[in-house]
Amino acid sequence: MFAKITDVTTGVFTSLMDNETGADAILVCLSEAELRQDIVLGLPQLDQALERMRAKGLFTGASGELEALPTHGLLPYAYVLVAGLGPAASRDTLRAAAVFAARKALALQFERLALKLPSGFDSRSAASALTEGLLLGTYRIAAYRKNEPARAELRQAVLLTEAAADAALLEGAIAAAEAVAEGTNYARDLTNLPGNKLIPASIAEEAVRLAQHYGFACEVLDEHEIAARGMGGLTAVGTGSVNPPRMITLQYKGDPDSADVLGLVGKGVTFDTGGISMKKPDGMEEMISDMGGAATLLGALHVVGQLKPKVNLVVVIPAAENMTSGSAYRPGDIVTMLSGHSVEVLNTDAEGRIILADGLTYAKQLGANRLIDVATLTGAILICFADVATGAVTNDDEFLKPLLQAASAAGEKVWQLPNYPEYRAMLKSDVADIKNATSSDRWAGAITAGLFIGYFAEETPWIHLDTGGTAWLWSAKGIEPKGATGVMVRTLAAYLCGDELN
Picture 1 (cartoon, rainbow, N blue to C red):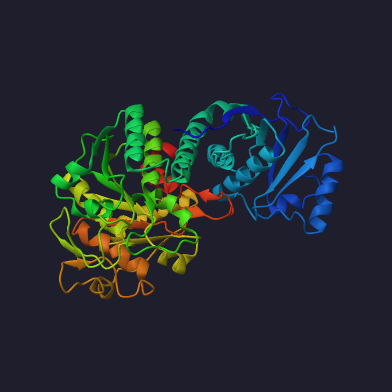
Picture 2 (cartoon, helix red, strand yellow; picture 1 turned 90 degrees about the vertical axis):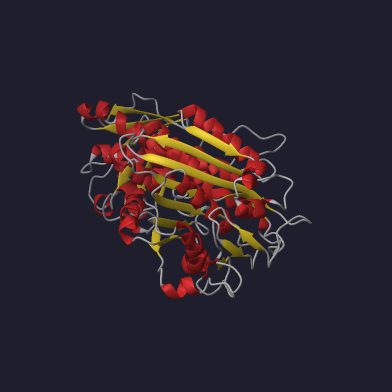
């Protein structure tokens, strides 16, 4: 399963009067200062239309603004799309401009779009941002209607540079950006699948297909092997469902001379009812997204498979369906984990941290000496950040710093939460090594949930990323679509493949 992407090529821009590509429209990105110039597009009628919109406050050049100007035959394009870049162009504003341009192109049923690279901006960086945004903007959720009408497709985009020598040099930047956007859209596809179309066994099958496509080593443990190896956390969470759990691992050795191995662990709860601690029915359909962490890692591996960075990875996906039944685990149960530690279960809806704990231990057994877990872990993170930012918890601030830098470069918001001993003390149990919930999840719920996972990292440098607010949106917001966002694929791609993306 790979999301369909737009074909992106390069060309040379001479003037708006030329359209050798046969594009239906051309995107021109403008800063606020450029919009205020006397000559903007070079055609009086269009410049006057822009000035009227600016005077009325309809188009000010702010980032996120986009207008489609019909040319009425004055140009060889049917439309000029003008996008605002704010006070100055940046990767983020260029990416956003391309996202909105792609959406407008689909709405107007364009098949071919030209994009003029802005002047005064590094051409490789601009090409990368525009390509990434364009492909992200063409994403749409799969539909299952009996008579689904044919959808318009943006089949070709051409990036136009004023310097003829630049066109051939942009191919590498375009290819890398395509990989990142495709990986993000792939994660979105997986996360948007209904629960009856993605169970633990089928996410394992998807991982196997991805591994075979790129030559990764892959191992899938079924419920019997999971139990035999002592993975009590994953076993407990999976016992309530007729769809048994899977422990999935993929390995990539991009730097065989190095002993450094990064372990990536992704929450793969393919549907979460809350178990015996049942969730409210309103909005429970969103719980198809509770495997968003697993999808993020598979999306990141899609990028790694194409760009082949010089890193060693162990990717672990504990996959389960958290259902309620006569065989489901209960509040009050004591569960013995793969690490040998015991967990007092106070809330069966705090299941993600339990399976991730076994995932972290298994990643360490497979040689990981640094750990990052990604999970739609808590609703409490929404109280902290709404649906704007991903929360991070770590036991090693220096380890976290480059990941935060990668998130900034990727245009994704990540904010560090504190790791104080008082929070760890809130997880102490009277009858086990640790409990899986506190007396009130409204008190530091996102922090204590992350620190439960960190308990099993022990002394290994570890980062937890809680995407409970950012992996799924009820409506489109900014450059992110309705439904699954594929959040953290771009951040991990920048973190793992920085040299290949620059």
